[in-house]
Image 1 (tube, rainbow, N blue to C red):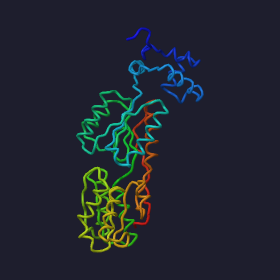
Image 2 (cartoon, helix red, strand yellow; image 1 turned 90 degrees about the vertical axis):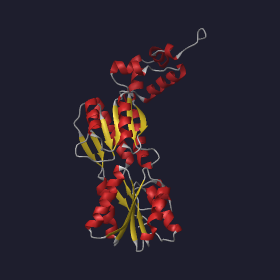
Image 3 (spheres, rainbow, N blue to C red; image 1 turned 90 degrees about the horizontal axis):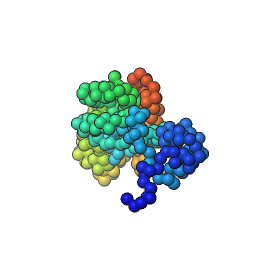
Image 4 (cartoon, one colour; image 1 turned 180 degrees about the vertical axis):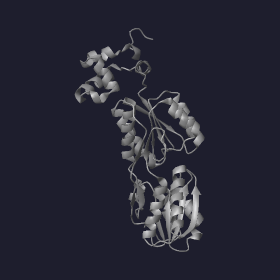
Amino acid sequence: MRPGRTTLASVKITDVAARAGVAPMTVSRVLNTPDRVSAPTAARVRAAIEELGYMPNLIAGGLSSRRSRMIAAIVPTIASPMFSAPVQTFTDAMAVAGYHVMLALSGYSEESEDAQIRAVLARRPDGLLLTGAVRSPAIRKLLRDSNLPVVEIWDTAEEPTDVLIGFDHAEVGAAVADFFVRQGHTHFAVLSARDPRATLRRKGFVERVTHHGLTLVAERILEAPSSIEDGRRGLRQIVGQLGQRTALFGSSDLVAFGAMTEAKLHGIAVPDQLAICGFGDFEISRACHPPISTVHVDGAEIGEMAAREMLTRINSAANSARISVPFQILPRATT
């Protein structure tokens, strides 16, 4: 090291406080609980941190407060818009409260998610955000024994690990079937990804069609996560079974868009010969032509709710809770 060279370790919190003209405790609050500091003061402190190159010792701070200021979020994929909105709003809200979110991707394998959960628990986060509520008994016990706040989203369960924010996917499928029946449809098809939540939507759809005594002409299971190309491939596989006007439910808007694209190539008129409804209310379903009917769930609101519940549990004891969020079918030009 060159003589006299300043290092990150040589800049202390007292140096930042002196440069910003505040007490060291104020600097600490800006770093850990920024909502407790006025905006002008926080701006002065951050300017001093930037100017001096101060790097807080988060490990030491975590040991003294027994908090890491880190939240682990595990989602199956970021390839799907389905999870981007809740993760973004959750991350933004936690950042305002002074927490950083570490994102991990589990895919749709139970073994992969179990490994991710064990790995992040070993890093001692202050809380966990998880997707879905289907866990192995061993992992559920591990989560409860950790005594960490756990918020599960995008699903329902009779006994949540801690906090569960979501909706019944089987009810979504049943509601889409009822929607098609009200439009006079008698023949139905479904293209569904293999993941647990899409499977529940498919199951609810098929059971409701059967309940009405109507005809399911075709069903295809796609890999997860499913893409536009999967939707096209799935439609190609069932096109020979679409002899009569059919109502198709796609497990996501990407699948629905792929099916609509492939239907056009086969000269199948949408919606006159093939009515299509997706799930997720992605941008593509609103922007394409014709716009695709879909099921809307407010993912951004789920993320904000998850952050509120996480902070509540970090700061005080609270009982387990199940919070239901609504879904809404948005009829558009494909039905």
